[in-house]
Image (cartoon, rainbow, N blue to C red):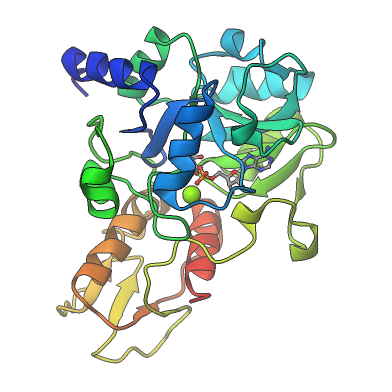
Length: 310
Ligand code: TXA
Ligand code: MG
């Protein structure tokens, strides 16, 4: 991806002035503001219509910058070394003297942090002397944005600037892992748990019991295209949009293929843009053929399951 320096400088200027802008990441686009600024962070919540009790992820250039705000531990350092920058978010203890605005954390003493890999956003982060709070750049509970056009569709003129970065290469949000005590995955994402497990060499807990959910972002309806989504459908009807993991010989106008050959990475990349396309074509409901529950297929199924709680 060619870096447009003028755009990055414009983004920097707006951020220094406490504005919110959209930034590209390899997972999904983010709605970013200065994480040390109360004014900027308040704007993010307002724009996104996000409940105040749902804290924000903060994006850093590297772990040296993070030291001022969080307590780093061995598990973090191992995973950082292997996977960062990349699609993984860590929940860590916040330092008492951290400058992170308490709007970001909802006054809690933990912080979710990430090091995005996208070259445009890395270039921007390197030039800033503050980290960026950035939830996914979509209206609260709706489908995330994987292209600048998606962000435009959701926010229109209400957003001051969208830093162009092409289509997100992964297309699903980061995997969130809480490393404050025993490692616990809070959200499935772009990095597979089995890959993380190989590096940590210890049991990783997953948050399968909804009663244990402590953050709203993981609990209620999410990723909703705004129309009913039916899962594991064998027989479709012609009125629904029919989503399949693999291209079929027989092709109808209401068929939407996530991948040519059933490749799960390609399917992940195309998932959100396909759901948006279907919604914009005014279908009344979506049927999805079974998607293998392995590798990134687990994350795809997680998102579809939440989207189906219409
Ligand atoms: O890939 C991603 O993670 C994207 C890109 C833009 O970085 N960001 C993203 O942010 O997905 P968002 O706000 O849509 O999802 C963040 C999730 C929310 O479910 C929130 O509840 C949770 O992270 N979260 C934030 N701070 C937390 C904390 N301290 N402890 C546990 N969960 C936290
Ligand atoms: Mg989100």
